[in-house]
Each structure stands twice: as structure tokens, then as C-alpha cells.
Length: 275
Length: 168
Image (cartoon, rainbow over all chains, first blue to last red; front, top):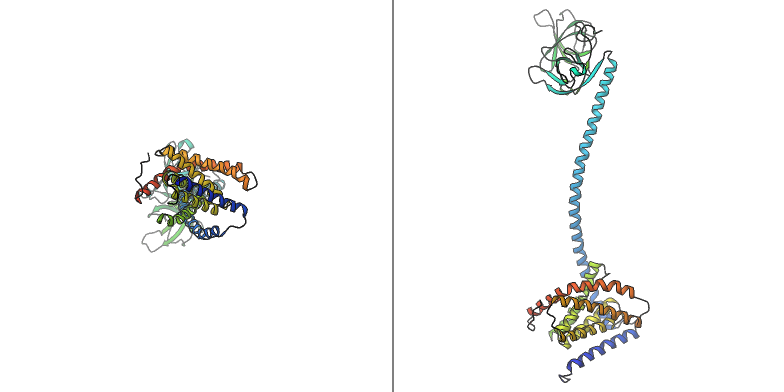
């Protein structure tokens, strides 16, 4: 070694200190002139920094994208939930709109009918069993009695056959036990409309001499006092005179779609005074 | 000999990486001077020639990369290296808490040196700027320096250097 071992550390330290001071003084003297070493270092480090920065940035972007995706998944879940809630709300509103339309029709019907009436909601349908009936949410507490006519906006539904305080059972006109005095609107021929087949009726006791055509409208005649006169019952589907009996065989389709019945109106008429 | 050959490359990579990390993590607002921790480590562990050249290189490269006047950080790093070397003769740096605390003090010393030297070379008052950047930087360095020391010790052992004393 050039220097004695004893002073080696101090001498090297001094040299380093002097070098740094020389560099500093050079830098202070010529701040605008970077010098070759500095230029070389910058030239070498620039691509390195670029590569490193771009790699770090890519990693950072990947990480941020991952985080974004995590957030996206959460947002997606939240939106799905919100969508389900909104769909159910729309269904509710649509249901409300449809209900209000039906009620509007019922209201119009109530206004058109000259009798006191009460609206009721169908709470159960029992058309699959032997007796084709429906259950409504109005009973004796609301003035319902047995034998009251029940109508919908399209026509007659049936009559009440059983009542409790807050519910009543309605025998539908398609039930075989249902018999309603009826007449054909055009020809004014009278008969009895009896329930038959799964969803239809037959008009009985019409002589073969009468001319009945498909499409003729059947109305209540008001004779038995149960139903007021002129309520729509159905339309003639077909009239058959080929049978050997005295009367025609007339199939009538009820105007009311009984399978989609939701609200009905009960006419509070007195049996002895149906007008 | 290999040490002196790879020294400039190592220093360059270190400065580049620490600049990139500082940019990514702190948007360049707080510098993570791993090079300073390396300087302290050199003061504790390396002989005067190796350590001195390492610090000289690191300081000069930092001058080049930071855009400061040449020799500014070179001188500061050399001084910190000497301070560390002197400290290593008085105490055995075997405790992580001591390493962290000493590194924190060195960052503050660096800040003090900047505050002293800056008005001699440049114009303008940078007191607030130095205080605002140095304190968080000192805290960051104080926290990471034990980990950096431990890593260097392990690297030193792997490379078959001198028998390492344990860091507690």
C-alpha cells in the first residue's frame, strides 16, 4: 500500500473528502455544464428508469384493475339486487294499475246498475271440484245474504249460496246446480240457463221452432226474481235441433272469464223486488 | 476487484430503483433514500476504501439523478459515511432499534446539511420544504432501515463475506 497502515484510513478518508469537494466546486463553478460523466450517467439511467417506471406502472395498473374488478363485482351484485327490487316494484305498480283498471270497470258497472251493490275481492276459486264456486271477502257483516246475484264488468258471475260474517261462497253460473232465467236478446225467447260442461252453460227449454243463431246474446230475464232483468249472461255458441226431444240443445259461452276473476260486484237486491 | 467493477452498476441500479419506488409509492413527494441506508451500512460494515468509494458513487449518482449540483449529495454522503464509521467504532450496531434510530438521525443530519449548504450554492429559502419532506422521510427510513440492514447482512453471508455478527 502507498500509505502507512496506521494512517491509511485517515488518508483515504481525506482523499474521498477532497474528491467530493472538488466535484462540488466544479459543480458550483459550472452549473450549466453537466460534464461528460454526468451526461453518461443520465444517458444510461434514462432507459433504465423508463423500463422500471413502465413495469411498475403496469403492475400498478394491473393491481388497480384488479381492485376495480373487485369493486365492479360488488357493484354488479348491488345493481342486481337493486334491479330485482325495481322489477318487483314495477310488477307491484303494474299490478296496482291493472287492479285500478278492473276496479274502475267495476265502479262503472256499479254506477250503471240501478241497484245498491258492494264490491268484493275473490279470495279463493274452487272450480276444479264438483261444485264450481268462488269465495269472496264480503259476508253478512257487509249486507251479503244468500241468493244475491254476483256480477263482473262483463256480465253475470253467479249467486251467493253461503255466507259467513266476512266471506261468502258464490255458485258460478257454469255449475250444474245453477239455473238462471234467461232470454235471447234478439228473439226474446225465454229459457233456463243451466251450467254444464267444464266452462260453459246450456240454454234449456227453447222450442225447436225458434230460430237461434250462434252469437246471439243471452240475458237475464228477471222472471224468477233472483236476477234483475237485462244482465249479460253469455253468447250462443251453437244451437242444435237434431236431437229427438222437443227442445233445442243450445250451448252458451259465459261472457265472464271465470278463470281470471279477481273482483266482483254483489247486487244487494231484495228477492221480492228485483225491479 | 469484482467489487469495484460491479460497484457503479449496483449504485446506478439502486438509485434508479429507489427513484422509481419513490415515484410510484409517494408520487415523488417523499424520497425513499435506500442509498442513505446503504451508506450507513457501509460505514458500519465496510472498510474505508470500499465503503468510501461506494458512498462517493452513490452520492454522485444521486446528484446526477436528482438534478442537484454535482458534489452536493456526494459530500453529504461522504460525511454521513464518516459519521457512521465513527459511530461503529464506539458502538456495536447489533440492535434493530439502534439501527432505525441512527438512520433516522442520519436523515435529519442530511436535512441539516442541505439547509446549511443550500444557501451557499443556491438562492431561495427551502427551510419549509426540507422540514416537510425530511421528517416523513426520516420516519420512513427509520422504519425500513432495520429491514434493509438485515437483508444486506443476509446477502453478505450468502456472498461469503466476513462472518456476520447477529442483528437482534
